[in-house]
Image (cartoon, rainbow, N blue to C red; front, side, top):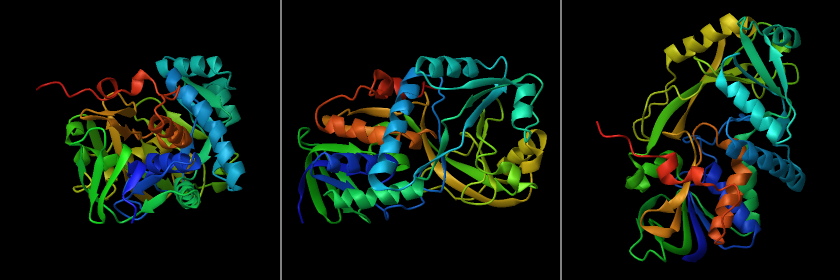
Amino acid sequence: MKTEYDTIIVGGGMAGIAGAHELARRGQEVLLLEQFSFGHVLGSSSGPSRIFRLSHRARDYTRMASRALALWKGLQADYATRLYWPAGLLDLGSAQTPILAEIQTQLAEEGQEYERLDALALARRFPQWRPGDDWQAVYSPQAGILNPSLTLELLTAMSGVLGATLLEHTPVLGIDLSDPAQPAVQTARGTFGAGRLVIAAGAWLPGLVPELAARLRVTQEQVVYFRPTAPDAFALGRFPLFIHHQMPEVYGFPMFHLPGVKVGLHVSGPQVSPETRDGLPRPELTETLRGFLETHLPGAAGPVMQARTCLYTTTRSGDFVYDSHPASAQVLLVSACSGAGFKFLPVHGEIIADWAAGRQHPLHTERFGLTQAAPLEPPV
């Protein structure tokens, strides 16, 4: 088996497979190592649906989303496979919620289409809603739904077609940086070396790079599917995606994949590690979600169809991390989840591939540096 590569990527989730696919497309010899099977459900990259949105409060993310939308459409065309379903998105909050004004500013500066709706206009346009009297909404028509499991299956297959070496069931036993210019990865299948190494291991990143343990937080999050009492009203095309930017910070989907409304709470679950997670939905979180639906979307507050959990890996700032390992400039540390990473998948691939070629992608800004995105916890 070949043991030397241009680039090795550790972690076959969203960021890792995006990087492997883009590197292989550019003709690099790339090795992708995954400790479980490709497409497994133990991390942050599986499931039938994620929100794609252009609406963000920070310019870096709005620009990244604009680039990602073009790339998603390109992937669909290249591989004749649908990955993105337009659905529209409502960003919701009171008229005084600062993020709504910030979202409008960023959408306007990027030249993206949006509408502002007050509570009365929201209820007229989308009668499923019972908004608070002081609510405002920003409606973004280009938002949509992405299918993570289908995307990873497609890009894994195409990475192999393009020449990448893909090894699953290959946990990393150690990372050797004794020669910072030539990092090596130790596995049960042997030791592999490369000119560049990318560590994009999601919730397992703190274990592989102990220097990150105090900088990243891993939580077990959950989503719940409720069966609407009037399903037609919540069909894709009639009911848009939504994010409620006040407490409780609830987000939700129209019916997609299952005939139920999928809702979740942003970063609300217990802190865990991949070894201590129990995978069990918390009844109190389910009841919080039901309470929100009963108040504001009563037609969606039917029986629970299903509850699922997954892992989030977040930084204190909520930003992604793209930065060099403290011990080697040839090693890129990637933490691109924070509950919002999947929509940017093809941009993550470009950032990783540009870094491996010795260039800095224009969207790879100082915001994603380790010290700024993930500062150490203050001493107690």
